[in-house]
Structures are given as structure tokens and as C-alpha cells.
Image (cartoon, rainbow, N blue to C red):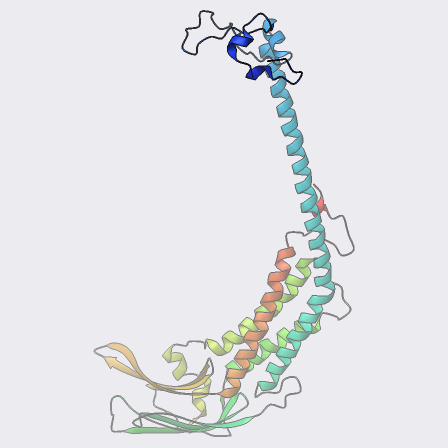
Length: 352
């Protein structure tokens, strides 16, 4: 077959490829199943060497390098702590400055506003009293009926201001249940309720403490405010206690008391009558001394009735106390900064 320029030698028959007419180099092939007689080349193990470490190790400086690295770490850590501490100090300084600004505003504005609001509450409370107090004419007259069935004790009375000006009292004795004892109170000799006047006096004192603070006065420390609020709270607490907790007296003192002389006719020496206020109630109690085999004892009966103005007074006094306590608690927050002075922006409490 004539040779062509486009002849593809890879498709020539094998015997023609091996003939001398065509010069073609054939690679020796190795069967896949033959055993390799030449060993694979030796490979050196891969080793990584950090610059300077190997030299330091060769020179015996590994410990020095480790110490140097440790010092760098400690130094960086100290710098981080120092930076964090500075941030904390700056934050605390800013918070203290904001607290001082708020403190100055409370002293200049809020204290006077609360005192004004408190005075309004207390004057309203004074107007509820049945005695002359802050443009209150007083001498309010009310009638009450106190009784315990079945006819154990009954009192029909008239309360004018802080005194019982008229009363008809009847009660049965323990020693003689079938016998009824009667007595009365007349206009000529009224029964004085000292608790009403005591409460009114304490209320007057609380209002006076507020009036002693001029509207233009600028408080400069928390102690000034706490002193004023403390005086007001003390007066209000004494006023409430006058109505809530009547003074207890021995029965012998009741029998010989001044008010017992207001009763007409006078009672026997083993009997005593007492009128008092407790919370919002008017109470009458009758006591009788008993001799039980040489031991002196007493028996008692009592009747009560609610009084509206007492309820109003106690509620207003409580509201005044709450308002005082709220201001006291707010001022107490600033009491730790006792070196604060109004107008100062660098109090010693802000020094670090």
C-alpha cells in the first residue's frame, strides 16, 4: 500500500510497524503482573523548623525564649487590665456626676414641690378635725348611739368638738344582772376627749415644720432635707398614735379620774366609765371591781361606733406619711455623697 502523508501510524498492522521499511521506536512494556525489582526511592521525613527556635535550642536558649514569650504575655495582660480599669473608673465617674446633677435638681425643685403638696394634704386633714385648726371653725356637733344588746350597755351622746357635751348612759351590773345603773353627762360639765386635741396639736406641729422652710431657700445637703422630713414624720406619727393607741390607765386611776366627776349622778366607787377613741371608732367602756376571795378583779362591757371624720383624718395622715417617706428614701440615696454641694462639679466623692 503506497504511503500517504495522512497515514495514521497507530492504526498500521503490527507486522508492518516492525518491518524495516518503517523506522518506529517501540517502548518496552512490562506486564501488570510482573514483580518490581527496583525499590522505591527513599524519602526523608518532613520536618518543620520555626525560625530562631532551632537555633535557640541548639544554643541552649529554649528556656530564655520561653521566659521572654511569657513576659510579653504578662505585659500585654497587664495593659489590658489597666485599660479595663480606666474604663470602669471613667464609667463610675460619669455615673457619680449624673447622680450629683440629679441630686441638685432634687434639692432645688423636687423637695419644695413635695413639701407644698404635703402641706396641702395636712391642711385638708386639719379641716376634717372638729376643733378650730387652720381656718376650721371646729365645734362640729354629731350625735351617736352606742349599744350592746340585750340592753347590757347603751349610751346616747352628743359629740361637740373634742368633748362629749351630753350623754345618757345605762348599763347592767355583773353582781345584779336584773338591776340597771343609770348616769348622764350634761353641758355644764362635758367629758373631754384629750386624744382629739393631742392629735390636732401634733398635726399643727407638722404643718409648722413645713412653714419654717422658706420657698426661696436652697437646700445644700441631704442632711438638711432629712432633718426637716424627720421632724414632720415624727409629728405625724405621734398624731396618728394619739388616735390609734389610747393611753391605758389602771382602773383605780379611772375611778378617781377628772372626767368621772362629769357624771350625774356619781357612780359607786367600784364602778368606772371611760370614753376613748381607737382607730376610727368611738368607744364607751364600763368597768366594775370585783372581790373574788380576797383577789381584786374587774369585769367590763363596751360598745363602739364608727366616726367618719376620724376615718378621714387617719387616711390623710397616712397619705402625708407616705409622701414624706418617699422623699426621705429618695434623699437617702444621695446621703452617701455627703460632700456634695450645690454648684460644685468636683466633689471629693468623685475623686479616685
